[in-house]
Length: 248
Length: 236
Image (tube, rainbow over the protein chains, first blue to last red):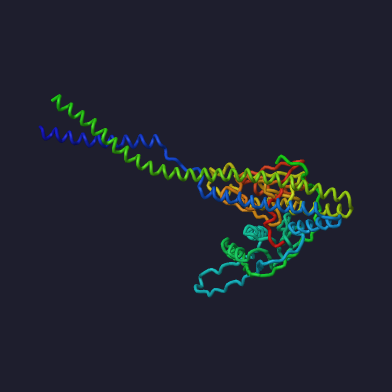
């Protein structure tokens, strides 16, 4: 009898201890839901970095306009201030792509790849049919976009300089840039840091993508690359500079 | 017998309490360690957030300063143009070049296109089909350019001669600045021409509309911001 009741006491003690622990854990976790991170630190850091970069750019812009203003104010004669204005004009034409530019960069040539002649191992194996597949406008847009995204300053395709309003599109069987037809083989010149541009092309798998179209991309570094000016006459019909501070 | 039962009751209560205490103290130390870590992260996060906010504020301030400065320079240039015809000629060229290069804010008639992921995306088997990709945005921009758009901006970022359009997840990166959906493409040009070019049967809108949500609105007057950061461009 005594033995039995002691056993019961023992079991009872253990069970109630377990229940106690469970209750406590339950209470804890329901009272304090785990605090979740709303945004990752890394993302915030990149945001900050972008803002800092913008800050730097803004300061550079401001100092440039300050300098321009100072030059206007201090020019002794009318002729001198006109030459200041002409310099400013030249600078802006360069930004707009209306002047030829020179620097280091890369030249890409998109050429037909030789169809690999694989030895026929198995005569029952079907010979892969190589379709006539050509590069379309999106392929070129994609390539150009990669180059610009990796710091290319200026790009021309078959000596057609790309500017802010250049459209690359299929018209019938050919590709047109603005209204000029470009014909294969395509030669793309890009001004920028050659190493960066070349590694970007590798990273994005440009070669593989063009191989699907049976094309080979030959890349070449150049220390001195000349990119032609965009000579299309551009008529401005609709836009005008904002004089008043806008609400946008 | 009743004594024994009483003893059982006490024992139950005491062990119950002991268990509770043990668990609580264990949890508390664990939680404290976690909280300390969380606290550190949280502090770092708020610090970063604060810095971003103040930086944004400063940038806005600087932007205003830049616009004021541009206006001042504009006044001097106009005064010069009035005095001398040669200056006037140069100035008109300069204004055109500035607008084309995108370093000044411009206004004019145009259209606004809003692209966003389709509502069906969530309950579709092939989600990739129903979200806006970078090539979709490029396609629309390209079509606008072909239809004679003179200036284009995406989510407030003016497109210049070396702009790129990239998508990472649900965000779009234009000129290195990230922004979230919906993607708003504003273009200045002839609204009628641009609209009809986009709406051509078998055209851009026609093929995209089945998959993503695109809205188009013609505007009589549209303002596009200037591109900031042209000083960065080397090779000048």
